[in-house]
Image: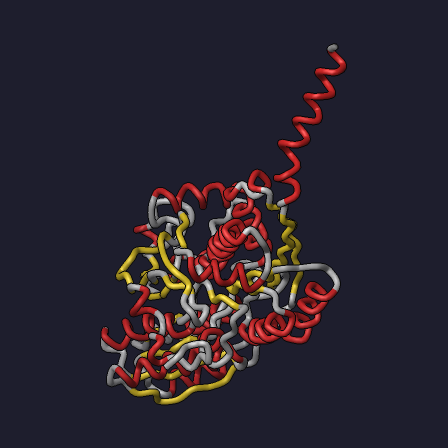
Length: 401
């Protein structure tokens, strides 16, 4: 009798479990970024940590979604990034590629993702072309872009009297887009661009370029670069006494990790635009504390926060679609409002632009900082509709005029 009861119980248990198993969805996500070069600190392994945290917080396994996360180093080279993306999609069964800093690599991965009908959620790259002329039904640009950076930092500097500019521009897609978008804001607000110089990417010695900028007598020297290039530019500008001589530096893309590397003594007073700061509220602080424990004590950058937020929304869409089918999931991602502890409430537009507020910060003086990583004070909030390019001005073919 006991044996019969046990057998019946086993059969009944199997019947209860089997529908969930039948519906289980297996997702493979690839975090593709710089893991060894000048963008490794702002993305790198931290973005992998963030993606894993999203899976954990979503409780994917409990909801019948099995998630595998892999990662690779694109070395900031479009050919290397393209090769990895193709292999991931064609041979390794990857469904979604996340992060991808370096705009030239991002634009290449964007195109391959469209060809292969997969999904790309970009957190690391800046070029606004990802939701402009290069927009795709398969890509969402999550965290920030050159248009928003120009609106924030560029607009603020001009309004504060910085009406003449000279650009130091990283000579690849990102730098060109950032100079273009910032120059447009400067001239729109009545300022003038006195000149620009293209700098090798990546670069180490910016001396000759900084001397040209100094000689231009421009009130503002716009650094259209990022990561290690920005750090080196600011340090060398200090050696030439550029700020002491009355000119201002505009770090058009500055990350928390850059300020950490520079130190407050050097970075104090820098005005910058970010989509996320760890010390904004109780939710961002709690999440960032967990992140730091998993990532060697380092607080997250906006890029790493964006990977978390994007991965979380993707998983919500997979659950809602009851499928990992690309078209179904992308439709759900644009249909469902975005909501997470890091960016709050937002949405994904038809052009793939994730909409949320951006923030203008100033780097604190050493005397104002109360603890490690306490670097920013908030100057202004840029509402999403002001921060990002309006659809009425969009070059994206998905936008009906």
